[in-house]
Image (cartoon, rainbow, N blue to C red; front, side):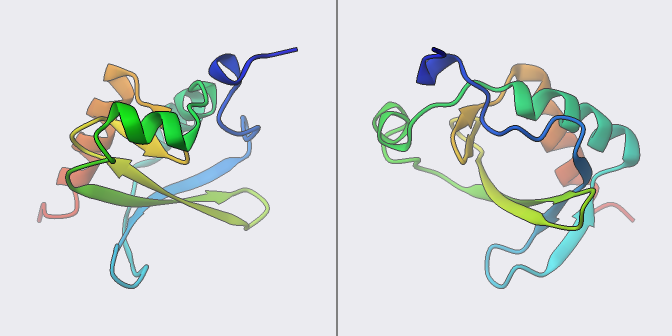
Length: 115
């Protein structure tokens, strides 16, 4: 049996079509990740280890700080929303970003404001 600390966040490997930032206020689509960034995210995110919400909440002092809101669109058209907590470099649903994945999210976020 796989322990909670060592199982993937979701079984979505190979199923992600698009990753995008959305408004935290109303869910409006803001900016899609580039195709290369989507491919990198699609490879890394499903491999993150699951961290139960109550454990993450304690470790991050209540998930304090600002968040980015993301939407993952699957190849079948379904979507999954998640938050990325900037200060703790944590995704909720729960998993801590690798340094590379955290950097990828920050780089893609800057594209929202680029001309």
